[in-house]
Image (cartoon, rainbow, N blue to C red):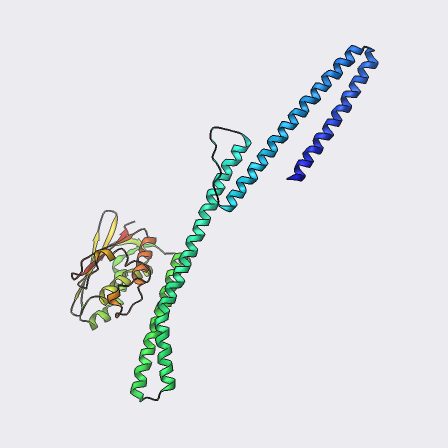
Length: 343
């Protein structure tokens, strides 16, 4: 900035000297041509006045330039520090106001980017904390089983029992990793949904195929009411994944000899898929929390699961322009309603 001021001062000095030389030459020429001293004095007075006016103009211009540059630098420093937004000036078309409006827009972009980075950082920290918490228990169990197998002699039957327990913990870790990979790919857009006009019946059949064996083991009756002609634009693989996660939860939390009913209805703008069970139900105050990542109610920790299925289901449905609604009452089961756009 000092170099800029010096350059301006040097330019003004050169121009002043050039104007003085031109004025002197003009005065000398007038004297030699007219030999009239009055004309010479008039020209000298005029030249002096012009030089003073030019000097005053340059001084005012320099002062305004210095004030403008100082204000601009101060505004940019405040923006970089995040202290305050540039003051918005209305009703003026000066150069400073034009630049100020651009700076205000730039500041808003910077602020939004800073907030997004902070949210992403907080989300990453939360994700790492959640993963650490979920991995801690199976890892501790595996270490305990491994130490027991290495340090203590035991009959073959007992050893097989420990190996089965170890296998169960490994399956839980593998399921957690697969669920996290699916979630991260959806959230980061690595996997884009392939929406096509296709029957919902086949998608629902694929989801039901994943839970029928478990339901049969618990003697849970599963009934389905889905018209075969229901066609909508959706991604079959990921929609089946979402429906499977909801159905899998229904089987897990429905006691033996219970019931699960799936009903599909065609609405004006949505296809509604109701998945009802005769399970334990969900308290109203917790119904907004069950879609959080890794959320599980304290009283169901003895049931296998990591609390990511409903979160993943909601993400998949939301990415397709739909939503999920839950209606439940403790002791009277739950109904999860999936709404997918007809188009």
